[in-house]
Every structure is written in C-alpha cells, then in structure tokens.
Image: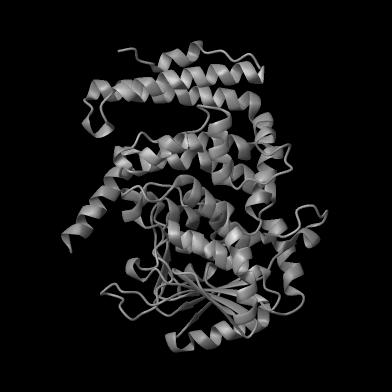
Length: 446
C-alpha cells in the first residue's frame, strides 16, 4: 500500500505560478484520495489504518492552506469572473472543487459523506472550512462574498409578489404574516422544540428576505410557535438551538447551515439586505429594518444568539436563556463576538464557558432581555414595540449603532476564524461522543 503520510506535506513546494501550483495540488490530493480508497470505511478501520488516514488528511489540509495563502484572491476572482458574478457560498465551494481539483471536496465526495452519520465521516467539511476561512480572511474576496450573501435569495424573489399581495406566506417551518406594518415570523419546527435544522435555516432566510423587501413592513418580529414536546405541549417555545440529533446524523451541513446561517439570515437581521450592490452608499445599497424578539419558554444556543442581533427583546415571565457551548463542545456562532458587548466579559465567560443559564427576569437576564411580561401580556408588548420601533428616525439610528457595535471588518475577521475552528470542533471526539450519548438517551425514551 502506498500511503501519503503527514510528513510528505513538508516536502511539497508551490512555485507561486497558479497553473503549476494547481496541478501540484491536484496531484498531491489525488494521491491522498487514492490512499483513502484502499482503506476500509472509517467505522471498520483498525488503529493503524486510522493513523494512515489521518496522516493523509492532515497532509492534504496543509497543502490546501499553503496553496490558498498564495493564491486565494486570484482563485476567487477566477471563480467569480473578476467579481462580476455573485456565487453564494455553496455554489462557490462547489465551483472551487471543479475548477481547482483537490482544493475543496467534490460534489461526489460530499454526497458520499452525507450518506454517513457524523462519526463515520472523513471530515471533509474541515476542508471546506479551510477554503471558507481563506476567502473570508481576504479583504477583497471576503468582502465581496459577504456582500453576495446579503443579497436576496432566489426563492424570496419568486415569492415576493404573492406575499406583497396576500401578506401571508407559509414556508413550512416558518410562517410569515404581515400585521399592522409588522412582518411576524413564527418558527414552526414543532416536533423538536423549534430547534434549528437545515430546513428551518433555509425557510428563515426566505422569510427575512420577504420582510425586508416588502415596503409595507416597517418592523420584523421573531417568535416561536406551539410545540409537540410532552413537557411543553400547547405552549410556545422560542428555540432550542441547533438540533443535536441532526448533527449526530450528519444532517447539519457546514457550508449551508453553520456558515450559511451566519452569513445569511442572522447577518441580514443585523445589517440588512443588499438590494443594489453597485450603489456607493449603504443607504442606497441596502434595506434594513428593526427587529423584535418574543421569547416564550426559553431561547437556548442558536436561539439566544438571535437575541443578540435584535433591537427589542421581550420575554415572558419564567423564560430563560442560555448558550451551552461548553456542554455541546462547539463554538456558538457569533455569540462570542456579540455577547460581551451586552453583558460584559465576566458574565459572557460564565455563560459561554461555564454554561450559566440566565433567567430573563433577573438583573443578568435583563442585560439581554429588554422587557419581561406575563404570558397574557405578550401580544400587547409586541404591538407596543412595533409601534415604537416603527418611528421614522429608528432606521437611521439603528444603522449608526450597527456601525459602531460591529464594523464589517470585525465581522469578516471573526468569521474567517470561525470557519477554520467550527468544523474541526464538529468532528472532534468529545463532540461526537456527546451527540451520540444524547441521541441514545432520546431513542431510549421512545
């Protein structure tokens, strides 16, 4: 057996000439794939075989990082025709695999990965993360990609005329309704406590786009719908965060979900929707609106992350919020960037590193939640917030707050590091063990 081992990457040399380096990378990564092809599947390997696989994967990853360190801007310009075309992140990653073999996993390789549960995969999403990190780490390429991801989705454009006419669109896991100048987005992932999965992320981005594109909407509202869980049946729940069962089963894709969420609907909530990329000023390029969050029961993980980009958060009495990153073993999106400015550094560390839950009504909880009301007062509180945030001067002041709190360069640099770290964490032994344990406990309760 001819194996590619970790040390081989140290002898690899790129010349700086793109065409030659492209061939070198393709040959090197092809040899690595040939090694994997003769090994048993990951779940059937012995320790020696797994060391060979890990050595090969590590060597190819170092080669990709070195190639991108020299060529990322030219690669991005080639894929986007000199930044004249706009490829959303999934399209960009796929195009990179085709144009530069070995740089990112091919569609065939990713399809093979997606047939397996997370623990049985080779971790090719780590390779996607290397590419995403390099692109976002470039001022030129990263800024263009962020801009692209802030443009409306094709699905939203197709549904816009109907929504403008009827004021209601049922997307499946999200219902969007226009009511007295507000677009109310209701999460309807009832079977899993409104936890985020790939379908919900896609539907939420479409709904956010519709709310921002509709001129009759002045304010957006996020609220969880009623759920099916026996403990909460018939009650509204804001969000249980990432669906860990889906993560265990390999149904939480890195590019579409973990990166698409942050670059897509969450960023659009915070910064707005780019409707005219060619315009010079942000006021002409984008549309942004204030957002209200109505927290029933709890906002956990990704649910709490959403509260950090909203302009008014209303929680019902007894609700709590938490960001259990340490327990889950992954990075809580941009929570590490945004929580500190609301709570201060010490409390943020207690929440993120120590798993501290915050009751909405406590002084600590009120650093994230603006108002706590009785459940039967939630509707009136939402309507009052919509009226106040719909005032003419709110949008301009909101834009200035956004600029001061999180400059685009800070967002870009953070996300470049997130793209490198998050997929590694998602395939770490401790995370895989935790999600497997949770899945087994869940199955045992059935």
